[in-house]
Image 1 (cartoon, helix red, strand yellow):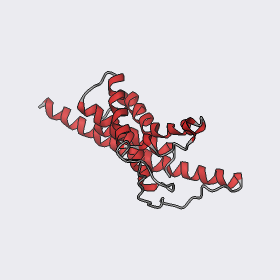
Image 2 (image 1 turned 90 degrees about the vertical axis):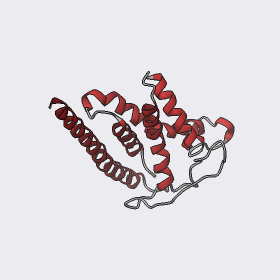
Image 3 (image 1 turned 30 degrees about the horizontal axis):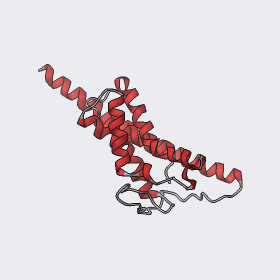
Length: 180
């Protein structure tokens, strides 16, 4: 089960991949938006904590394809960058969360096809190293979580930096070609 670090960095990576240029200096606000959208589906925890409807909401409608599309549509409209490319970028940034949970969830699954179907789907891949979320002594749990956070930080930061580097290099090459 990926943590917010992986979800946020993957959402930012998706937005970075869709940007027409590769300048971190120019795009950091949009990368933050991508990170927020990558984490957004887990705000369903608030519905569970507030006991809305008396049920557990995690991995349900906020983890659907339709929710991701609507979140991308709203994000593009709110920041006044409404184009097909931006709606797709922000929708896919949100959907990256659902895909990661679908691939690695240890729960019953995610509600991909809401509102058409309430069925929960999961692929059930094992994470790169085992970790146990069942209750055990606090020190062991903290150690497991810190280890996983470090792993996600290294792997997903590397992915984001690689995308930014590739986009920046491609932008510089196009700029240099235009000079001739």
